[in-house]
Image (cartoon, rainbow, N blue to C red; front, side, top):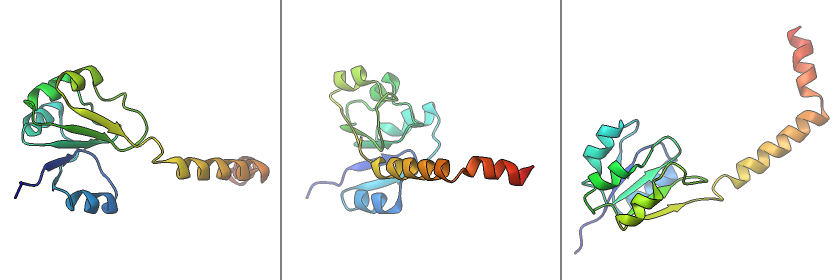
Length: 128
């Protein structure tokens, strides 16, 4: 039987997401890693899950020594991942562009309601 892949999660994710990852591999939740610590740890990982705070640079891909197969960006955009280095190292980079669609829509509706009810003006009046 094949060994389960090691998945490094470098930033906080929801527990349901972590449980899903645990069903597929060995999950290592190491938050707040420095660039040096990430480079030291990445050579023992098959996958890396990041949000916007972790920078996945050429140095990280080189430190992986070819073992890292996928970088998953939990959220929109992949500007914190060096795509050229990932391609050169044969590492797939994926993201979740619609992950916060519902939250963004809810925020938009809340802002419209706040404008319609003059919440900002009422807040300033109460504070005054």
